[in-house]
Length: 471
Image (cartoon, rainbow, N blue to C red; front, side):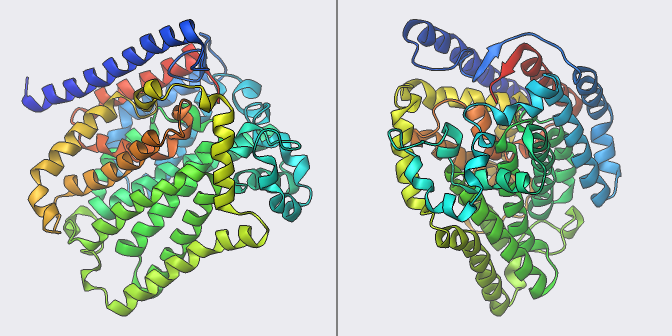
């Protein structure tokens, strides 16, 4: 048994121990004190063994990806691989959602008491609703918003209002939107990995992105949609610094990155932490990169003229200003909204849930959405950084594995900051999907991919068939 394999086993055992401890300690706290406000700690879920119409499809997708995913990802052309990954991710997410049936798994998810579709009729005049939005965040105000509307900037709600105005009314269309858009995050992450760490690693990561256990919560929650918008902002930033040909192409990609990051910040307050992942992209873009044989077009921006860099920065800032400007002119103050959200958070169960439990049990929730293979992958990513730390300190990182590790640990840092903030106590299996998707590429560093993929698929299938998740 090799030292690397033992390290993988230790990482998986540690993750399993964390989950087991969170379940047992959480069960004791909930039974004794009723302060967790979840029925199957650490997850917001109910014990409900069941099968459904999506079960055969979910099993078929899992078997197909485990059996053929690694070889197909290596053989297909780059574009065909990305499209195939999206199609497979879409099939995996839909099939898991339909395990709970159409109404319970898709159409009814976004129509419950705390969800966005409950307030569509209050947005018949969108500008007026935005200018009045902050007056209904805190409990005690007239007609306070339901929890999810109050807990997010209004771009999240406006999305579903616009779908309604376009004639795509009801929970079925809203659920289809979240699943379809959310599944594209897989492509955005793979594109970014390919640009920054090489296409070889992106191809190896592709089957793991497809069979992500996080798909249980992408189908159906609005956080899957948020994850895709945030992921594409990062992908366009990577394209701006490493991939887009010519100054004009880089400027367009930079503008798109800024535009989508601005939208990300108005979909979820917590996703402003994606700036840390963006910083990792810029760091990698500034370093001499992996060789052309890895599938990249160039060696980073070292050869880009200062005027081109200036134009790209201006385009990024211009794009970043668009969404905040629109909402500010409409009367919504982001900072005031966040200040009032903190008040609302501690008025509700957030003020009762014990920080001392959730600050580490949240990480157990992350194991559920990222999988045990990711625990092993993170261990290998850490080893890659240690091995190439001298190059990293001197600003020259040419090893593909180490570059991937920088990207992955940028996402891990963002997740840990969110955890320590205390504003994400419980339900992080849904809330942290956008961050967790960026941990999955570390699985590209694992050997024996089919065994690890089997473990990922089994985790998702067991969670979806044994529990009724709350979102």
